[in-house]
Amino acid sequence: MDGFLPVDTGRRRTLKASIGCVGVGLHSGRRATVTLRPAAAGTGIVFRRTDLGIDIPARFDRVGDTRLCTALFAEDMPEARLGTVEHVMAALAGCGIDDAIVAVDGPEVPILDGSAAPFIFLIDCAGVVNSQVARSVIEVLKTVRVEDGTGPGAAWAELHPASLPGFEAELTIDFPNTAIGRQSMNLRVTPDTFRHILADSRTFTLADDITRLRAAGLAQGGSLENAVVVDGPLVVNPGGLRHADEFVRHKLLDVVGDLALAGNPLNARFRGFRSGHALNNRLLRALFADRSAWRLLSPDDALRTSSGSSAARLPAAAAPV
Ligand SMILES: [Zn+2]
Image (cartoon, rainbow, N blue to C red; front, top):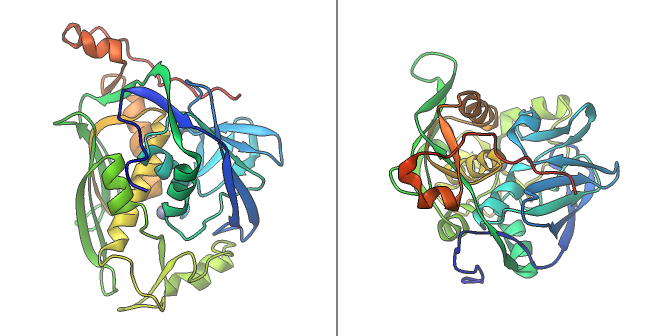
């Protein structure tokens, strides 16, 4: 279904129609319905727990749990949680959708096949429409870095000013003595590259970790239908991999989804080593904690960019609707 996206006019986009499906939560094991709905320009992406009647803006400062997924929490309601938001966020960002309601009738977005491809399919079926409202982007002005641990194996993530407009990402992962090994990818993320290179790569886990995860109450809904399982040098799934480097592709998909919680598209270059959900979220928090590291660039600002007059402010909060 190539070519479904309108030409990028710099206008905010939403869905033409509502569309949904039913699936199982990877960690909760609970069956839930997820429905993607159109939203007014300026809404942003808003997650709606329809069973609780509450809205949670898709914002980095609502992330409260990054154990194996990115989970959002409602303000002042720590019990109102929505887990595994990163793959649907990646699909929406990858398709250039700025405004949408993601309605879920339970505590976790269904994992579906473990990739973003089923969400891309839903978005394709619903169609995408441009609004009359111009899109703003967050321009990274200087390098921001976060680290986890010390030594050569320590994980880190960085945001740099973009050399060209848009978002570029470079990631290396390292799982010694497994079928994963060391994999790297450097990609300019566009609707086209997201769709063709990242979208269908699945989440993965090590067989050794499954017992530990289940004991911790996680991965209750995990199966070979929704995750790649790696046992030492072997890929357990009978169908094997979708791509030889499916693992690093999926981790880049996660980066796209996690960084979409900035609230507006990033004009930046991401670099990471063994970066996961926790570091990706810390990176956004570090960026927005330093008011000299970024600015919100509207199309009007771009026209007068030489003046440098754009006032730095937090990206527009996605107001509950
Ligand atoms: Zn993932």
